[in-house]
Image 1 (tube, rainbow, N blue to C red):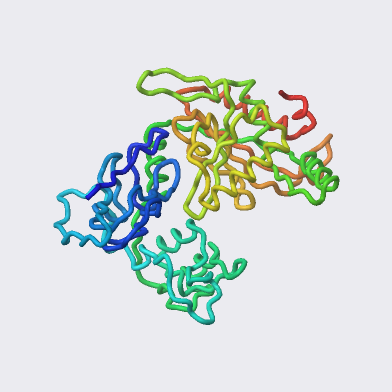
Image 2: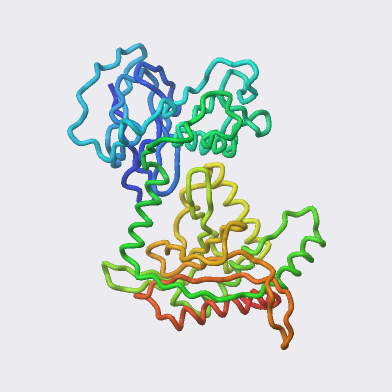
Length: 409
């Protein structure tokens, strides 16, 4: 009976978390049928079967983190009898607590069609993207009883979130509004927690904040939209990326990282900008590669493409690695100011905050202008505060006078 081992997933990945099994012992599978969903620090992926036959043994459970080379599953000849249950291993690495799992940790590939519920495709399969399914499992929501609000009855993230608060469209039981509910820290949330803790323990961060008058930039955005009203609107972020790249070229100390083992500062000649993105699976940071060679319109298009891929769970591993610098911009939820955690081992991160109308002094007169705060949090081991302040002021200057962005590199 052939054993199927966790393959080398590339990109320096040494282990993966089992999100959920797509088969069970006794199932018959064909070659290339999907066996399991795995989560790594790069992406989430379904792993296909290299063999055809009967699943006789599943060696690890959902929630476990297993190293590359570990036996995941044993597949025998068609009709083979599954092995009897064995005692649990002495040490299951990072196994999720049993009480944290729910019946929705395994969602059948196909279920009977239920009348009155429009969220099923032909054949009875619930219509929902993989990230939405994962969110439902993490929240303990059975998506088969939800009424989808998306096209064709598709279950959306909002449907799951509404059901979890007891305010939504679920046609089945709701989670109690009181009491205690425990959810295992796993998947992307576990990876986020590990990386945030590593950054917090390692980096002595300092944050420098500047006020930025983006009134002229707001006018420019309006002109761009009026000239091409059918094109997607361009937000502030593509302009911020362009300004950040120009500022990094002027102050290369921030386009760097600290190699702790070698005790060397690594300065980058490329400008690959990570964009912090909220997704149903948690925070992801897809990367705009070679941002210095792109126009503002090209940057805007690439941000839209990467954000859509991250939201749908289709972002590629290569699109989540290699950033030399990161920008975080929560949009309308940005608030007035925050101190984001640096994406270790990068030297700094820029936070873009909400633009609001405020009284402002121009030529001795108080006028109403569109103002936002721009903050840079930096690793004080790598650079000093004065350099970070000059870097931030350069970004502000470029955003306050957006015509300069067309003249910069």
